[in-house]
Image (cartoon, rainbow, N blue to C red):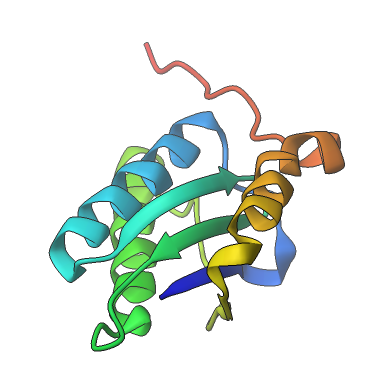
Length: 126
C-alpha cells in the first residue's frame, strides 16, 4: 500500500529550521525501520511535513507517524529546548500505484511551491 502523509507544527508556527528538518528525516528513517514502513519521498518545511510512504496492509501508519513526530521533536528540543512542537494528529491518504509519480512530483515541488517556508539556517552555538 502507499500513502501521502502530512502533519504540521503547533499553530502552523514556522519553527522547523535546517537542523530540525534533518532530525525529522532521521526520525522518519528510524521509525520506518522500526515499523516496516518505507519512506519513498519527503519534504520538510518550516511549518509542515509531507511524506510518501509504502507499507504493508497489516502495518499501523499511526505508529510510524507517532514515532517520527516524537523522536524528531525530542532530537530538535534536546538541541534547543522548546524549538519544535507538533500539532496533534496527521493527514493520510492512501494511493494507487498509478498515482505515485504525480504525488512524488508534488512532494518534490514543495520548496518551490512554498519558498517562504523553506527551513531557515540553523544557528551555530559556540
